[in-house]
Image (cartoon, rainbow, N blue to C red; front, top):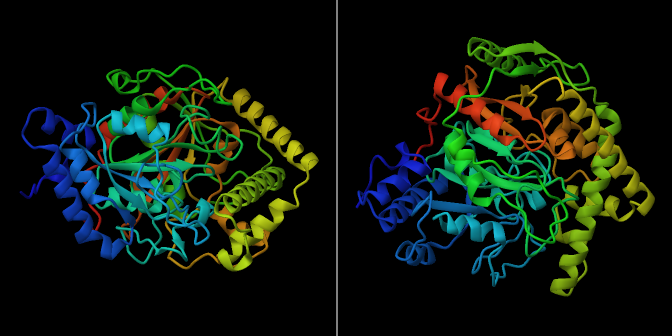
Length: 474
């Protein structure tokens, strides 16, 4: 039975329909599959489908805040029994896993039903989704443009109305970037807020963290409730979690908010991004918050080399570990040029350089903490420009510094919060005259996702965005 109004509901709304027995979980799953099959040929967002297993799960689902709600996992981490996780790379064979990660198990316990895996760039290295293994994923707002990365497939499916929320993770902006490109809510939680048990201690030395992209703030809050919490043996621990969904019933206190209208090196934003920032300034002021222009004192030029050292060394270690598991060494022909170049660079990072890089990251974290003694929230444009056309970046450049220079210019802010461990959220507050979403990023104090979510809910109420539909709509 078709459910025409299906995409008008967020995840919480769909679960309420199941709880009231107005629809069944099986009907929701069939509806999502039908919409996925209709839409994916135009988006190329789904790289593995597990529809029959999903239909079986819909007959024996777990009750929770997302009871019976269809969901896709990203093809980076998000380990699930019976599904391969190839990290977007030809080097990784399509071997189904024999277990769920703790993160996936917690999502299932919240009632979500896994339909498959979404498109990613190779190992999530870039802010676009157009790798060789799966081919380009397309943005529902304009299929000639990128949906962002590395959670581009997840963001495209949510923006197109196939599912109300989907898995995303973030080691340099990979939740917030695609959320900005696709007009979604994308919260990067505090470092250590989610666990990588049982497979890993952390992701990229604590730079990485997992959650979702969604169309509503309350779905993001409920998802964070579902997955938050450390277990014994985790190397990073966040402060005790709040009750995020329940906390949305309260409006935020009057906040002291800082904003920046340019990149941290003083270079201007694209005019569309500058307009998005000033639009947010007006809204926050009208809501009664104190808003002024100010920025943390980060020397971004000095942070890039140590950040790249950590990324490169972690990539090298990861590929060597994968090679050990599958019984063959990484070879140049197995990878895209950028991946191979970063792997080779990572192999050359000495232990001394690695430890110095971590020390530089720690100093940046102290500066962020100092800044947030004065300001509750800091915001900027999420990206330095609107969503780029597919093919903008050269994935075959083997010199990492040359390859990443235009990427860093496009993504001037998001990696900073991976360094400092702070929570940061993209909100879809602006669209340009070509109909492309322009996101605004709000950053909170370490451990304080609740303030960001309460402010986000206040902005969502003042300027609803969930009913805006892209041209590619399921």
